[in-house]
Length: 497
Image (spheres, rainbow, N blue to C red):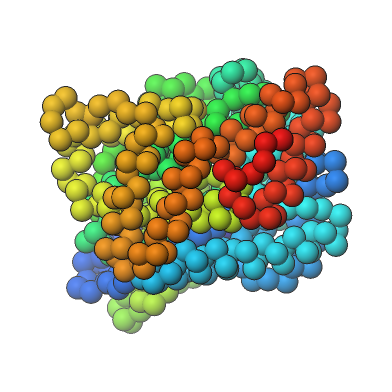
């Protein structure tokens, strides 16, 4: 929920400000159309980067609302605040895809994480890289949990104003969750890994569609959020929770005609990145209508890449699980942000997930025009939610060379079968073969052990028993989880609880 270049200085906005912002969005889109039509725009070698969201917890395993103090003590530009007082985010430096980019990513994340852990320790806290803390209570997520900052309050106020009522959260898993969130503080219960892949404009549509296909497979083997508020829910409960906790549609049902601000999307991309930006502007009311002085058309006429701050700010409040990103640095370029994966359990696990996601996306991109005729967008979306619910036990649809297509496949079997294609996608784009092999082997071993973070946590709960879990058990399991994650052995090598 970063401000993306525009400082937010107020919490409420009037109709005149909304009208001015809407007009500026149209001017940004006009500038983007012209920019994308320019020969050579966004050309360059692919690169990859990542963001990791973190939780801070105290000695009892409860959320520790000390993010500002820890941030100050960390004194690392890679570390930033996030939505709730117990959240932080690490932004790894981007690296060229060619060579050993994932080893670089792991080293960069590890260094920033080490600094954050040291700072957290100074304030009586530990860092948890996990999709959702198993120790959350409703009291942890009241309105005062929101990070003290104007933009967080402004965002929460704007969504509530559009909704006109608090946020009901209903998730059905092994147990049923039915609570009411007062505002967007429940969103801070979710912490994720976000992977950025730079792509050229002419490759954007096919690469984005390939990412839509690849996401469910990677999500199925990386679940790390099985519990919320004591309930046994989805392997990746974060997917359902995030969608409902920033939904600006009051009373929305699954078949609601109004587009959700958090979604898998609304169809295959046919033309390119521009249609996704146009869609975000057309379908969603602005939440933070703050205008910048820069005129994007004037910047173009001066031979510079415009920052398009209003468009980037608005795009940052429309949360697609795979999102188009425009960046003006270096003359301007496009990225695809893969946002569906959970934080944790370890840097090695997250880096392996990034390698699998990027490799499979690149491999499928070359076949995307054919693949989207063999599988509907609705079937890809169904895969995504099936993977979030059932993880390694999910049954996924996958395009078939012959009719009928797609066909049902076991998620674990499918993931292993696709590893060679992910390897080829990486190596064909310059990643060293030994680099690709090392990171994808983590995925293979995890699937063969059938041990994701979600499965390790579920096993811990089963061993402890429900009575113990409701007492100290969840905190004990989290303490063990945090200790093991600090050791950075991937989760499939962890001892059982």
